Image 1 (cartoon, rainbow, N blue to C red):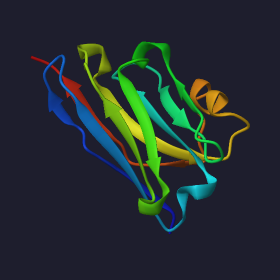
Image 2: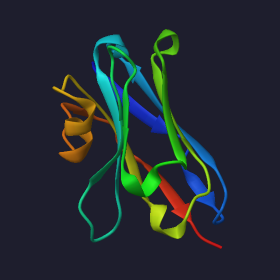
Image 3: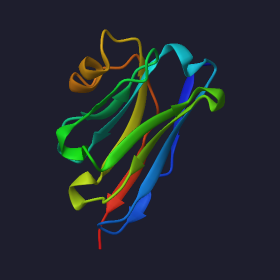
Image 4: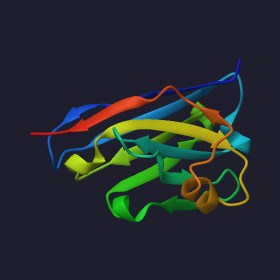
Length: 126
């Protein structure tokens, strides 16, 4: 059974860091673009960062550029999101998704994915 499982969320103070992990089971991530998305209460889901399967190209939402870094370890079938200098507005449930999109930018901008994880809560608060 194809499954994505996120982990690494939690409560962190403003300016702190977290690393989220997205582990796949039942399929290999090699052929899929992977995206990180988030949804805050009362807001629509938004694409945070996406990474290509082919050339490792990446896309970042403007709000997280220079603070978040997406990476993938195909040997471990896992994708990571390193989040630094976290802000209260980063508070949300973070989801990972797997898809074969035309471009990673489209995947993120459209918040589109064929497969979804269950999400992990990130709360940034003092």
